[in-house]
Image 1 (cartoon, rainbow, N blue to C red):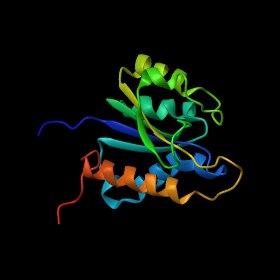
Image 2: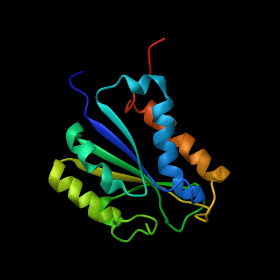
Image 3: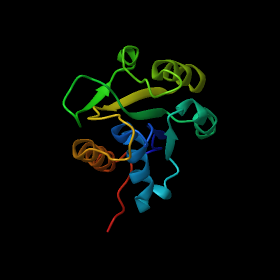
Length: 158
């Protein structure tokens, strides 16, 4: 089977702005999965609204892939999930972040010599509050389950 690629999952968002916390919820749920904790090829980070603050942790981990997970305005139905090509990040709305994700993605690619991908989740509401819509919560659950099923995070053998 060989060495598994080193993957960093970076949950981005502000959990005090309803659905904007979607990326944080994905990261939080992944860290709750018992079998994730013992994996040395997967790093899960709850980066909050300033993901640029975790670049040191990413550098130390030396990932092959950084997978950013964030609420993203894609003009789609609430809870829609989309792989966003790095080139397309440029035009994405990420007004709750202190640094544009396109700039962070370029930095990570150049400095860490890794691939960077974004999973966007269409929010229903980014109003102030801590209530996640049912649509976004369903998307969070789907992403976490898919990551586990895709062997990004190996399931324990029973």
